[in-house]
Length: 478
Image (cartoon, rainbow, N blue to C red; front, side, top):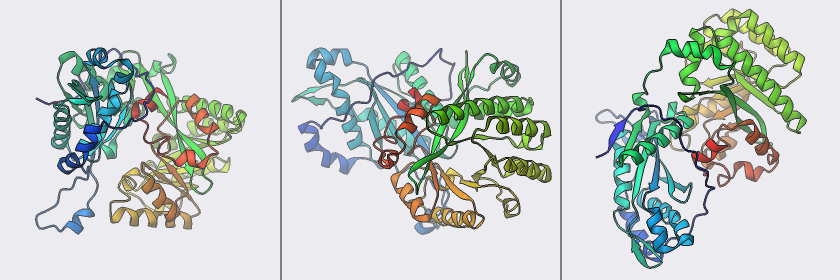
């Protein structure tokens, strides 16, 4: 029976998957012959979830908001040693490719990839828990029949661990961590495990987390990752966004959604942001010396836009360093104290710090504030980009936003770009910059530098074979 769980007791550490990606092998003759019939029987998981009212037409349903979920499944071959003795090491090492082929045939819309000799990673967009459980049941059923290896049938036993979360609010790193821990539980308990991120994880003790946050910087537990941004016309990396992470010694990886609010409540957000700014300045200078003088951006809390002391110290740090640093703010951060916030943003702009309006459209977008903000860049929230090629309304919203931003002399960045089709449509619409997993996931500084070393090759940047189709585990290792 499939059981759905929230995060259980924190595991000491999740095993790092160290095997390189395997090239996909050709399917066996028997499975090739069976493929057309299998395709006709396989279920379709669209991931587009609507809640239509009675009598609603199909055309109107298409215009409803996208509320899909992403399911990440990890399957481990538990009888690999026995299979290796039967078929030999060279053939056993290629067995995982046969499993990838079978999953691709069995489940429509699934993205399957081998991440080791015994491990397969499957990503599917689903409508919710019931459909996720159906996918897992179908994965289990897919391997009830033997796998034909060199003309002989062999039973392949797999254990599955999976995690799912709403695409709109998804933290990819957290999804990976949850899937890995689900697989660890599956191995220990010899059963299939599914974790639903929407049901939350054991609540952090906020008082303890607040106390530990104060010392986390001193202990070196905070670190940064960077997500590159591709300029569509120049086909070059135009900059990168810095994202802070907390590697807790006992809790493991803590993502911003779990500690930024705590930092704001504890009035530690200023110290955390200044630490981030100093690190980003140092990294930007290192990149410039390496030949990549791009803008690195950090997020500024709305709480800090009213803090004169923070504003002055931030201006001093950036001015003295000469580094190319950008600040990203949300529109809602200005609402608390508009006059003070806008005044401080203008102070940033006066010393050459480019201002970007982040997550545009996700909150209460106000044209009154938009025309007053000294912003050079407007970032369209990913909720409008993820279904850009399958929605009737999202393209209209995105196109009108691009035209509006250009009229206000701002560049436009589309967040959440995950497909070549979306990238092509954004280019036609006149979007300036793309950011998302098609370009790169958030990566460590050294990985960013290596990424930039190949950044003048436009085909490499937008070819999904080099970026998007890499499994989530690749970017986690990076």
